[in-house]
Length: 401
Image (cartoon, rainbow, N blue to C red; front, side):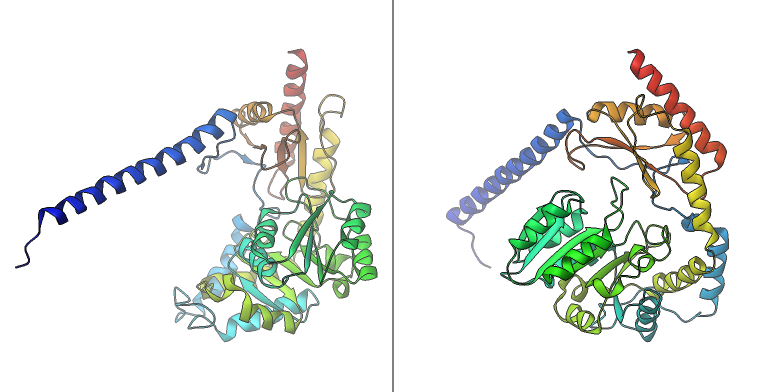
């Protein structure tokens, strides 16, 4: 039996004390950061389903709750009783299937692209694309309101980064002139927090004139505008890559990067979020296939959504009473001054049965805090009119104070 000396016992005791001290310092540091955002009123908390009228989700066409779509998916799954519950590994190990590759080709054909590569989410798709494709001495230029996933991917890249003023083509051109190497320009076709549209035609022309590669995130345009604004405008040839997500209008989960065969092969070999992630299982892929078919066979849903949107815009308080957006997309905004104001309005609307969320700084720039209103096909006309009526009441009360 090995004898433990007093020296060894003391050393072990010192290590325990040191570890306890380190753990306490880390805990204090985390608590301090949380307390700081609590003081600022910007702390985030998870919320359960609340049973309120939905004016906050990205389920624009109601596919996530569609009984018809659920039935189609359920019936189709019964035809494949031997499917595995999980993918069992990454696509480069045991997780690839013929079905996945055929689905990618089918989706790419719908969008008039050469091919595509499916990712587990829009976030990981953007992370992979911007991390792996631009190289050292290349340049990434993105709209200042671009989604956080693009910014995070660009930060991981060795390329230089510039942001340009939102939808400002003159500023974009200035930044392109400062670029080195291959230049990649990133925009959202519909901006997720503001709901306005990118000027894709002029941006594509500018990129063509300077030899820049345009990347378009179609997350909030897909399904709302056909199969995306790039397809609606017929500028597929002018776009280097597109990210189309399945978690908004399609009501599911996952995303695809669309581009050339060369881009797909490159991502398979160099995109770490793809290489080292467990693949999407069959039970996730099959619903994507069915939902695409459902989308293409129900173009009336998009017209229905436009009717709901027109109804909201026609009955909202005038601008002199309440500053609001008049976007053509399914995302509308009511702008208020400060985090406390948007939180107060949001809380009051939720008390009245309407799930309208406050978007606070730093998610949006300070001074641009807003209530984000998402319109869906499943919102009844009565719900929309009642929401507008509450905005009238709240805006009058606000002015009275």
